[in-house]
Length: 453
Image: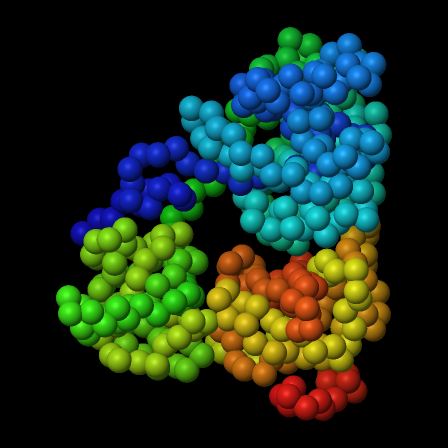
């Protein structure tokens, strides 16, 4: 039997338009918020009351034309300072595709916000001011996109109107950025010359750059291929809740509900429940109130197994032939997002998919300098916005994939056990290249009541 897979958010193949999650990033004053505002305005994705509010705010600031940047800079501090601080999410659609846009900050002190916005993105738009070219922050944004394994990167060379729409200026910037991004391992790079303020090549082609024959920003967003065949990925099913109605109608029903993180599951598949390692066979899959023979990511389904196993929230169900390794020792690249530093010897909670366990920070071997990708050895701690390598030891075994293989089951969060604050976003495995295990530090052997690993 041949199975036809739907789009990424159309698992039943109903023909609904696909969804693209993308993030924007750029240095301060590169015009990123103006680009997003122009994209929303020219694609007719702005409500009339929103546009009236922007026009009123623009007039109060003495501007003749609406400042489209105000469509995304929603915080009062952002409007006062003229910079983007928080991640602004915007939802819009065209007849060809639906979009979730994460407008991320460009300032270096908000690197953690960009990591948050780009962590689920399938495409990143990096903005560059044509007058300044590739700067330190541009390289930082490209490095973050590569670190997070964002599969598509668009370089939007903005303010082309201020360099007389000169092709050589665009070509030089595009060549420099493409060479740098390719060295980081970015798989696909598209370069587009634009003027967000004038609207050139954002939604409509520019009459001022007849030398450019590529797509506009919106056209590329509508046509870039982001829907992958789920059968290419190893199946992973984190259990969210165990369903046992124990009613007269269903006295013996036992199902395991959750969302398929990746891959395809079929009735009859031999599966392993991790971390216990017990095996069984899928006897039924319930989706949207009916039984199906096959299900794939990102469907939310309920699995029924042939054997009465001890399965609970946080367990991972995977095909026996390709189950991930179970470990308590994790080496990962992390971005520290909390104001409180992360230090060697810290006790934390580690949340992976639906499972949360105690963990110890055994070592922090290095901190990454995104400007030149150099490693600062043995920093001892990570401050807010720092990206570095950590070695963790968990109190209970976890079934992790490498982040390079799965962004869903290769990622995790470190949480402060005292107040539940999110401390760090982690990616299992190496950042840009494979590395050996880090050496244990003296703090790795520290003992603490209730944290005896």
